[in-house]
Length: 112
Image 1 (cartoon, one colour):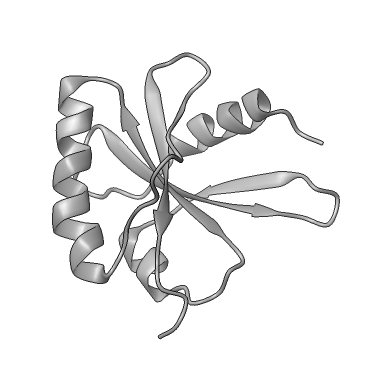
Image 2 (spheres, rainbow, N blue to C red):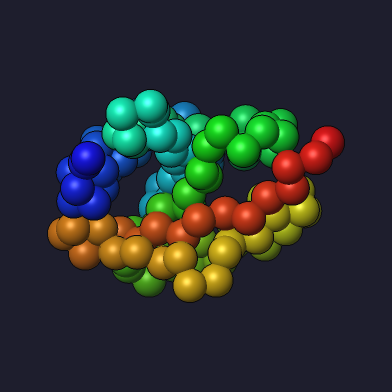
């Protein structure tokens, strides 16, 4: 089984390739678990997130732990998540291994 640190390292590496979302300090990822219990992470977008009605993925919002990053996170939640019927899940915040970013899971509707 992959350790949390290795999962976070992979997510951070993937985040560099995240589709352009118009923000410099936040990014979205989605995580799935294979039959061996290993997690795979992919960059994603609001469009993919909003259109996915399955429970195959866990969607995450990452923000840099700077004032700009946290301000962009607030703006993103207000302008992108809430209008699409989504929100951040409470008590899911997790700091990255190097403490330069924080992750929140995203609550979304699973029915179209």
